[in-house]
Structure formats: C-alpha cells, structure tokens
Length: 255
Image 1 (cartoon, rainbow, N blue to C red):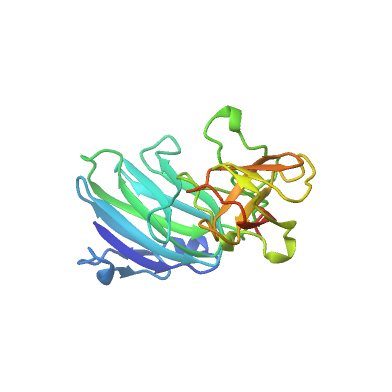
Image 2: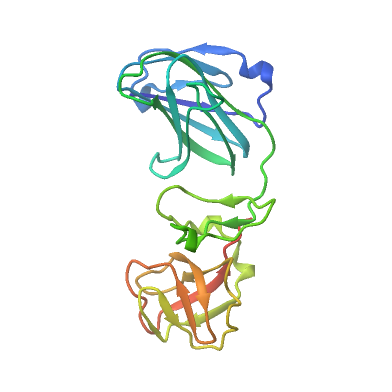
C-alpha cells in the first residue's frame, strides 16, 4: 500500500497537469508519503495492491483521472479514508477511470487500485481543479435508499451527499441565525418527537433537520422526513430522545 500526500493549488492549468513526477520509494506509510505540489504521479500498481493519496484543496470542481493500460478504479473518501464520497471504474470506453465532483475546501483521500486483484502495471494519475466551487443548495436527506424515498431535487441543485451511511456534521449546516424554533421533547420514539409548541403541518420538510441540544443524543443532527401540528418524524437516532430533552429545528441547507 502506498500513501502519498500533496497540496493542490486553487486551479491547475493543463500545462501544470502535464508535468510528471516520478514515484519515489519507499512511500508505503504516512511518514514516507511522497509530497507532490503541483504535479501528477507516475506510479506502478502491483497485483492486489492499493495506492492511497491524500490532498488538500481550496474548493472547486475536482477532476481525477487515470492514464495507462491498467484496468484501474478510483475511490474518493473524506480525510480519514472512511467516508466514501465518489467512485469510478472505467470511463470513456477504456480501462481508465475519470471522476468529477464538486468539493468544499478541505482535505480528502483517494484510493487507486485495480478492478481485479490481478491488475498490474504502470499508470499515471491526474488530479486538479477545473472550476470554482459551486455552493451546495442542500444536504442529502436520509433515508433515500429506494425510489419511494427519492429526494426531490431540481435542475441546478448541488447536493452534498455520501455513498455511505449518513454522517451529519454540524459544521456542514447553516449557522445558528437560521434556527426556526427551539423546543422540548414531550415524548419520543426513535424516529418521532412529540412537540410541545404548535407546528405548521409540513412546514419543515424537505430541507430541515433536528439538532439535539441536550440529552443522550446532544449534538447529533437528523433530517426531518415529515411533520404534523404536534409531531416531527426524523431519521433514526442512536437511542430514543427522552421527555425533557431539548432540540432546535434548523435548515439543512449548507453555506
């Protein structure tokens, strides 16, 4: 397994992307990570091997593509390498992969491996920003695991989503001034909160979420899937919210 770390400038011009940097061994651990700034690695894949890359961007439309005769696959993760964000296996009627995604500023990791354990050979990797960041208009609303749960979107939307289980992060949400209301749980199951203040039926779906401000689930956020005049239905919580727990209803749109 190889792990590489590099910093991407705000925009990488085609001429810069064309500059090739040879892979330098050993680079099998984080401490040995090869720094590439800017540039694109010429690398080699050994059978059943995985190559990891880490990078930081200022935000924008990221494009990652492989070049070579190896049947490659690329998978994009968060900075920890645990939350999958995007994947591509073969593109442009070839063995190479080509992935494009709109990303916020931050650090990410990239896994490059073969489509089969027998894939082996030389390859190069292009990683760069092709345009400015497009602000997200909304977060993915779970559950959306089947067509009946499909999230309604419109042309031009930029949805922040994950291929894995939902992992709400408070920093992804619009700041405190957009809080709609604060309330206390009267009674609860793992998915339904009985409100203590009158609500407008259907007013907080789609695009809203519950953020717990006390109790066992304090700090956690769950998307609202429905609400009546007295109840709010959310995605499941780790444990049921208890009577007396407090919460805010906030918009789930990102800044």
